[in-house]
Each structure stands twice: as structure tokens, then as C-alpha cells.
Picture 1 (cartoon, rainbow, N blue to C red):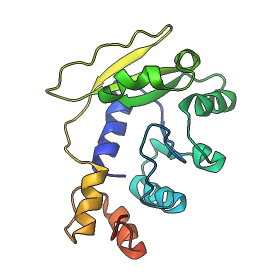
Picture 2: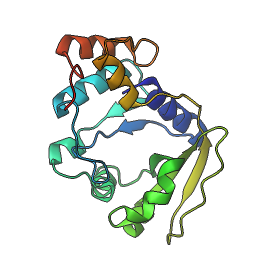
Picture 3: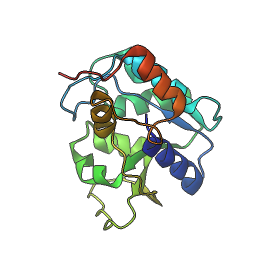
Length: 183
């Protein structure tokens, strides 16, 4: 969890008028390469350190406790059951819009959630995918050139990640010796 993620969450809350935002770390993201850089317990702990004290943010282990590939539609179904009277939104970066048709049961998911799309300043607006029932709320995101890959690389090389990652998260990473070697 780095400041780019936190700024994106804040942008979504402020521009879409959300009451709160849940962080939902995936057990295993089906469209990623499958390499895991930190244990689920460490990932949850780092997330708690990053958002500690900010009442706008909540964390759920709904996907991690389920295990296996994390499909958004399954999570949305569970959240709909827990919050039947709430409007549900799912925050994605504009770079994910073209991938939405690849998401499991996307038509059902589009009926459960509205997608909040964070646009990158200076980038052309991504075209809306053609999906029945798709609801999009576009927000202007802040441009922070921070990536998790770069943070892991810097740690592996012994470089500072100050001003990229919240201080309490840095302490956790250092204390646990995370990302020192990647294989």
C-alpha cells in the first residue's frame, strides 16, 4: 500500500461522494501473473498500518479469507448481502476499463456495482466498454508516479521508500524484512 493507492482512495471518496471506502485485498488476482511478494497476513498488516486512524477507510478480508482466485463478482455478491440497502461502487483505474469485459460474470457485476473510474491527468479518456447495464462515474485522479513494483525494487536495492509509502508501513516492511529478495 503506497501513497498512490491512498490518494486514489481519497479522490474516489471526495469526487464520488462516498460515505466510506473498503479496501479489499485479493487472495489471488486472476488477471495477474500469480507471483506473491508478501504473505496474506503481511499484506493485511501493511494495509492496516497504512490507513490507521483514517475513519473514511475500512478493510475487509472477505477475499483473503475465501482464498483462491479473487473474482470481484463473488465479492460484490457477498457485500450486497451484507449491505442490502447501500449503493455499492467499485473503484478502478482508467487502465482497467478495457479489461472489464474479461472479468468474470461482468454483466451481473455491472448490475450490482457502479464503477468509479479514476482518470489519470494528461491521459486521454479511456473509451467506455460496451457492456449492458454498465454504470460509470468518472473521477479525476491525481498523478502520482508510484508503483508497487518500483517500491519493491527500491527496497531490494536498499534505497529509501520514504515519501512513497506511509511511515508505519515502512517500519512494518523493515521489521519483517519484506521484499529484500524476490524470486
